[in-house]
Image (cartoon, rainbow, N blue to C red; front, top):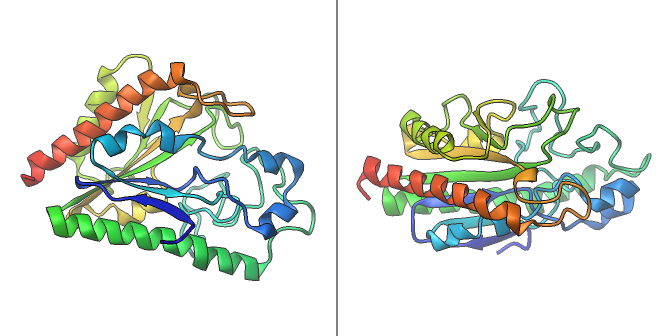
Length: 267
């Protein structure tokens, strides 16, 4: 198994993908970062801890160990932009606020980037493909939950404050509409967290690439506002008081996803 990822094999047809909680840096990236970059502010902080209940439910979990500043696992290998307007790419050179990520002239070169693609990006996606294949062969279908988080206010990327729960189904193309409807019902029923479907975040590369309902693979991305479970300023501390009610909602969402799959496919 590659050191670019951690994988836990589950017992139900659900895979939790976590492409952005990693904090490891390659020497080429670490040498070139500006001071602000060393704090890794754009990390999906504490996502594996927040989704700790997923293993209790029997889900498989795939977690990246390297920072998105090395290579972004939720972008295509050819780096075709997924969103119009401000965004970041496969090898970003800016922070989410638009300021430079690297010191002048110290961004990693082509060789270092190719190495990151082959040794970090490709192993993660290979593991993802293989687990989805195993789930389909075992159960006849696979459920993919792409787990993300982001600071609730990033003016360069979106206006105002982001909703707490940002579901992406690629405008309905990445999962069965009935599953999306079940998730909307859960989001509407809970108290305290705002939500939106296919708003600013419609699903990144992982959701769009692997969510193919016609082939019985259903993918949902959830971009969670970090204010719902942590301090959004350094040192980005996990807040159990905030996280507990958020985890309860996440558990209901995952349980609903699994229940829909059992009803739809009979196993």
